[in-house]
Structures are given as structure tokens and as C-alpha cells.
Length: 186
Image 1 (cartoon, rainbow, N blue to C red):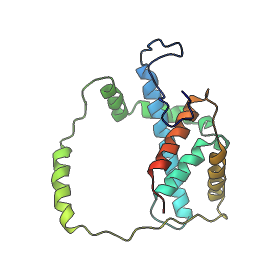
Image 2: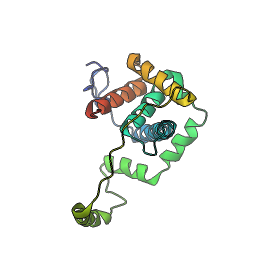
Image 3: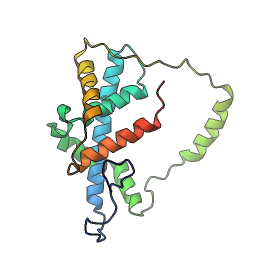
């Protein structure tokens, strides 16, 4: 089993010696909270990139650049001064706690009545929906400091192979690589 393989399971429930390990749901919630902080920052950076490129719309390419920018070691995402506070905020988030509760086999604490309403409204919208012209992705200008850093991070990401003992970095790299494989860029 090779952790750089995209199909390598991150959590097998077994130790390196083959013994079954119980899932530590506290750690699961912390990792999920960390990923929420990471994704939020990546999206914020994608928004800034889109604005620098003169677009009002954030496209998948902008978000992917934000993911890569925050993933690579040079941007020091995991060394952010307020990272612990942001993770703690997400850990206290009721919806995130509910997801962990459901993963543990619990019942959804926030069942939605909107599911049936959404089905009805989507049927109504299908008939008369107009589509705007598709926004075309444009590269941001190198004169912008953040854009320059994001372009450099994209290059760094291409050559970045985190060591296997940095399991968070390996998981992030694998997740971004999977997302890239599933996207169809023009």
C-alpha cells in the first residue's frame, strides 16, 4: 500500500500491525473542522484571485488555485497564528457536530423539511429557466502580489510530494489530485 496512490485508504481502522483500532470520533471532528478552515481559506483566496483577474464570478479554476496555494508548505497554512481558534470555532459548529454524530450511527439532529419543497421547486424551474453566458476563466495579472504567489504555489504544487509521515498533507494532496481528475477544464 502506497500513500501516494490515489486509491490508498486514509483510515483503514487497522494499525500497522493489523490490529483493529477504534475510531477516535474526537479526532474525526477535529480533522473535519481543520478541513473546513482549509476549504474556507482556499475559497476566500479563490475569490481574491477572481477579482484580481477582473471577474465577478469564482470559477472552479480559481478555487483549485486557492486549494493548491494553501496546500503547499511555502504558504504556511498550518502555521497560521489563529488556526487553533478557527478550528475550535468549526468544532463547536452544530452542523459539523451533527455530521460526526451521524457518522457514529446517530440520527440526523437537523432533519430537513426542505427536501420535498426543493424537489417541487426544481420541477417548476426546469420549464422557464434562462442561462447566462458561461464565464471564461482568465489568468490573473502578474502585477498583483497574491496572484504572483498563487501562480508560484501552483508550480510548487506540481513538484510537491509530502512525506508519508505528514498524513494531513498527504490527504490534502490526494484530495486535490482527485478533484483535479474529476474536473474537466477547457
